[in-house]
Image 1 (cartoon, rainbow, N blue to C red):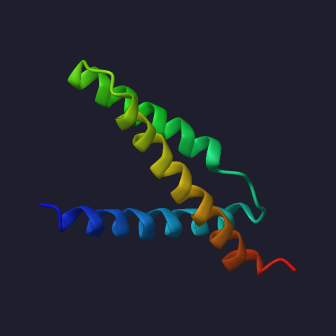
Image 2: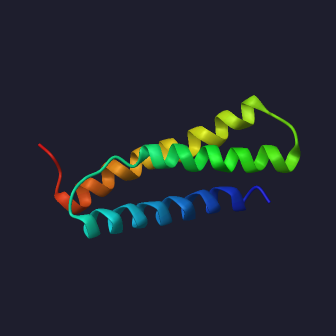
Length: 87
């Protein structure tokens, strides 16, 4: 089971990078997307807490940090890919 977790994380990263690039190409200007990642992380944590009926602060930190870090990395790379690197 542990071998699938890094594979899933890589798949999520590729999916998110592709989505960010497609958004930037469609709208033709750069926009900050990390608040959306924060919202999705909060919704995901909320669903997890409601399903388990247990608030785990350490798990919530992991649940919020992962989408935020991934989005910040994808956002910069996506902007550079679509609009060329900034000088």
